[in-house]
Image (tube, rainbow, N blue to C red; front, side, top):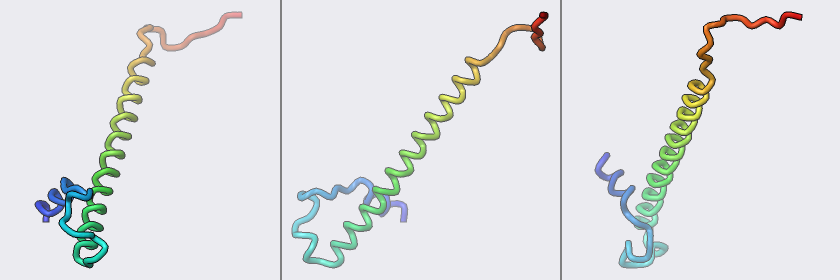
Length: 79
């Protein structure tokens, strides 16, 4: 569910997150693995969004900087 995924996203993995050692319990290992998967997915999504925003802003700046205000359509070189 969405609530569980948000809980996994915000839950820590440090020593204070659990009362006992995670290696001794299979269900605890599963919970840690699930939290890591959710956090990894969220990290990848944030990285991709950041990349797309950066590329979009860069393309927008290049587009606006390349604007030519000259009314001339074609340039010739008379020689």
